[in-house]
Image 1 (cartoon, rainbow, N blue to C red):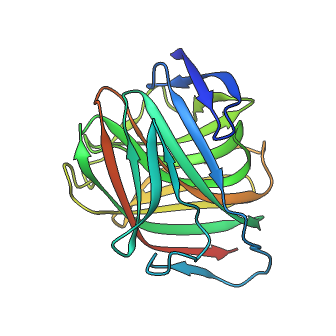
Image 2 (tube, rainbow, N blue to C red; image 1 turned 90 degrees about the vertical axis):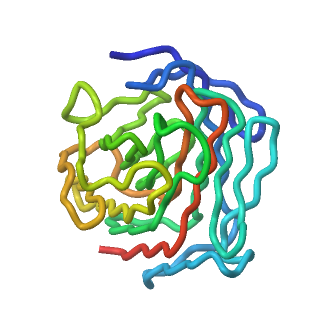
Length: 220
């Protein structure tokens, strides 16, 4: 089921999109300005605040380096904040350790691949209440691939438990795993390449704080 949603960029442009599970969703986009050219593996434990991810501070939330991690804070319900790293991957395999630190378990957080712009990308996400799914965002519209709703995953550590999220985008195949357990596999040929990124959002809670650490991204 689709529901109306609002996408607001850092530059205060406003777009209308729709999303499965997330009503009245506001998303905030930030892309690093560092040159990410090259084919070497990207490894980031976020101990260096100049490693390539911007620091954001706006009324709706914040994103930046906190205590040798990267943290996304959302200050209002039904809101996503996401940040990308300015290096283009064609095929990629990305892993990150992530946890909800504060807020409702009814949330969403995970990884982005093949980011074209704030209206076009893929996202592999989980929730602290034990759900997971692969999304395609095309022309500002969210679509959960292959399912009517996010699927239950017993391997997800709920509450403030840390989860290892793995998201692979190779040719037309998108694959998601959590804590070493395969979650989903979908096929889509809309986007061929793009940036990787981090995404986190609230649904019914008034605030959400999400922590990311030990990111690795391999070109495939």
